[in-house]
Length: 379
Ligand code: CP3
Image (cartoon, rainbow, N blue to C red; front, top):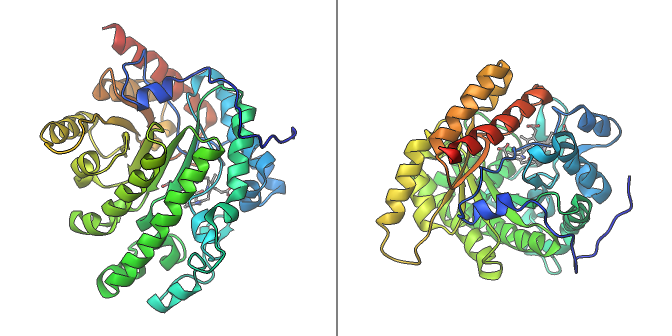
């Protein structure tokens, strides 16, 4: 592995700014493309690193995190328009004092999750001397080093998990079908739920600000479990904290593009557009892009308060389409690009790459985006 470089005072010039221009709402020559979980177990070169290194060791070792972040950028070269730093949303619960293990084949596991509001006393974020920046400095170093190693090939994205999704993991202790334990807090311990959400939001906002200072050029917030909430509970327990995080980051870095991915939150498209400062709304594959574009534009047009704003959409091919034949992947990708239209679209999957994906099928998707979205602009 190459030497590390933690100098944050100067970075290599950016050669491909298509993602940044599109995220800022500019007309561009084609849709930029990247994929959630583009670094991960579907890549043999990632699995080779994981043989010798535990998951969180990769996250905590800047040279390893850089290597893994760059793997898809090497393999797909000019086909990818962004890099996302290799890390996980669960590093915030870890920093707040909870142990998180990654059990092979089972996913994340918290040996001692939060069970009752009294357990909030176990979190360390309000203890004297606690510092988000000190706890998560390893990720800052990973970002700085990766930004140098990218040598301006594409912009580097930072990210966090959103408060409701992180709260759900902290209480459930791992994945769950119904989120019954976490949702118990919403209805039986409502003020403790808000306290936890506010504390996580505070850490997340500070963490994103630190990520930009360290080299992140755009940011994404993952509310992966938004779809478990209905509209009323999303409005109370998710939206205000998503909005708060964007407002806090934008107050410091108004020009850094921010994306929100509220997976499953169909009903919240208008609210995300009008009541938050996110530049980009990322869609899962269950939303029709034409309907999403129309709803977002209508909601923004009828908004009478605040500065005029435009929202870019990201997504949204069903990741399982990549399990299909090449011609199906090309056809479905072309249809997707057409449905989003010839501007304000960042191409992506509707959720992350899966371990069973064939890397060559991802290449077909990336090539198809380049082709179809450039064709759309010629018409
Ligand atoms: O997108 C990227 O390439 C950057 C890295 C990244 C990872 N996780 C790496 C990872 C990102 C952005 C995440 C986000 C994340 N993590 C989310 C939000 C996005 C989503 O999927 O909805 C969530 C819910 C998690 C929690 C998490 N971490 C789960 C459920 C798992 C295990 C299951 C799985 O999909 O692999 C992880 C572990 C994890 N995070 C892996 C990777 C590559 C696999 C770990 C391994 O090497 O064994």
